Image 1 (spheres, rainbow, N blue to C red):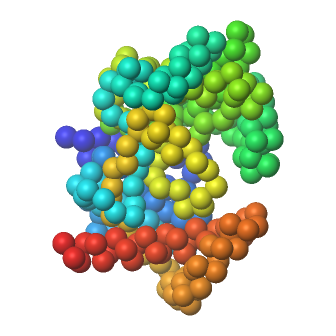
Image 2 (image 1 turned 30 degrees about the horizontal axis):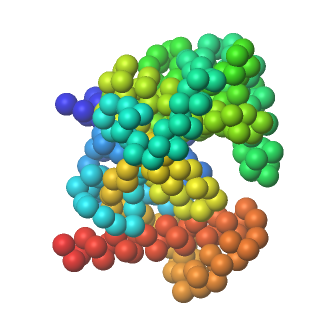
Length: 308
């Protein structure tokens, strides 16, 4: 029986961290970026009805609730997850140049699990360095937040792991990874940009895939769902270089009444909003664009299911 039917340790971890978590009809929901979503990786999320989602949304009092159905059961669509299954072997990469780059990273960098002290001292440093690459958009966790994470991870071992990439004795990359039901989500990955030209990101991903797929025999390594903000090419990089694939699902969204009205009013102007998002870096505008893109995907998924 999947973990979702038993104790959901990821939801318990979120509670220990002080996150908002509620349980409705046996489904755990948590607050993420201002909305609520189930606290599960896509392969072990329990069945969710519109009624359950509406109850959770009413309790939470947030603008919308989002969840997936039919994960891995449809061949294509507008909503997907990017992940890697099976054993990891560099020789499966057909592009010779890409194989060479991975090997160069593998030779120069080492990869291992971080200690609690390293998480508290080194992760803020790497996050701050990463902001120079992403024009200050990368969030830097406070020491207090990291201390809560470390404490929660000790209470619930096996849910959270930090992995670091090292050039000699210097940490140059970090990855914050959540484990659930024999799969892992690479929730956050950050790099010191000074080492990227030495192929640190290639060596880091090689070490992560080897650890989780070859040594821990996990079912898959997950990057996440389709990006709604379109500010990164990282998923394309994972697919082209490391052989990640897209697995499709149906996106479901229900809105608080007034928020639904605002979405419906703005939806006809979505192309203009997306154009402006591409022209300017503005957090508020970018969030509007993401909500409208999400609504477009929701409507497309609904049409796809109706056709079936």
